[in-house]
Length: 599
Image (cartoon, rainbow, N blue to C red):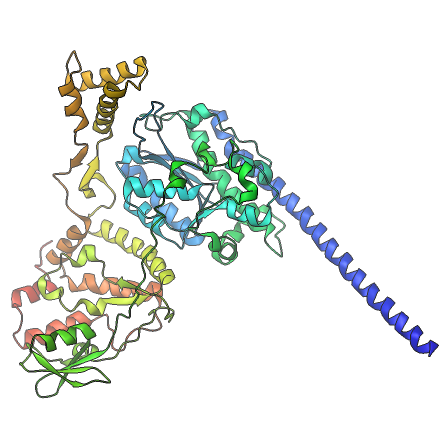
């Protein structure tokens, strides 16, 4: 018996020893991780200090910071942005706009948007000088697959939606991560997080923050302030990625590899497009003067608004019902939507002949019957799944040939569009849209059909006229409530007098200015899509343009679940059959297949 007790004691001691060894090993691992984390932070700090120093070095911008103030500048820089986003779809984002100090004066639209990337590259886009959001920027901001990091970024997203009608997706407020993993941090504004994560003290001078971001020229202080807000956000995201990494890299250059989607998606995706709310226990933090980026507090009027950012709407019902239509002699004509089949019954044009597989036989001779592979396509049953990955729980319609081109096609090519309307899940749909951007730009160059220039904009905002209108409305309110300082009222009056070339500001002048129309319609407007279609119509025909979009889709997305008989040559086969039966205008057929033959 004593021997058994002794063995039990030795077994217990051995187990305790193993447990102690495991605990020691764990603490050594944690210590190593902390040491490496400190090394990361030192390297990132050096990198960040290089990025924020430029405004003190002189008036010239460094090569990594780009100030965009015209359409040609944007056209030159946008391919480089696209290249970075394809490699690492993550960026720091911030916005600036002008808020007049006078009580009741209208807040200006977003005048500047800042984009920062993992390698310290920063782009400052002056929307007030460009006359609005460029088309490519709209695509990137609305793409949920591209995650945008910031503090108070959902507030900026709502502001962009109000000003430009854009639903910004993929917004990740860094405070979600802080609230979960570092709840002890009291200062959760951008400056507070910069100090906690990077050891950087940001210059948040209120005089710069509240300055006029619509000025003709930005000051070096404004440029530094704007660039640093976006750069700091992406660098804080880098540190968060490193602290969350189980096998941290030893070099800051390797840290940039963490900006690939497989690393940052699990960390930031769960908080994407979720508004940030302070917990009750953190109420004092929300009242801190450093509680949000750009000095816009958590309790701002945008956070109090009850209209959340719009989400991409997925289909709630299947696209394909696979109801069957039959000719009077029983020949299958096509599969279609159940509602369409029921419409024939309601109008007395057909009768239901089968209930289980809903089938309707027409009582009139249809204009045509399915012939060849093109006709067989409309007889095949189709599954309600993403054609790329096969996901079946949520999907959207994807127009393989975008509507901006197809709407200019001749009538014989605009019917039977279902061949080019496929189902995709949200992720594949967004990725496909990003790839479409490449082909649109190639077509712009090939067909001399620019995108995002003044020529391609139907209506643009004249900010000078908008300033006159704002001045008139502020004076209109001032005459009722006397809410402006005398100096400011005189300044606005001078603006109206200069514009209307008058010596006095009467009620009539104020009313005229308050109703001033600031939208300028471009008489030379010619849409990009129509230019491209006209180019193909005058050269090789429109079918090659349609085929180019289908081939682009197959090459970039590599779909694995396409409907049977889906074909790049579908339109050519369909029109050949109709032309052989003399059921279409032969001149329209020539334009579609071979063009007018003009250079």
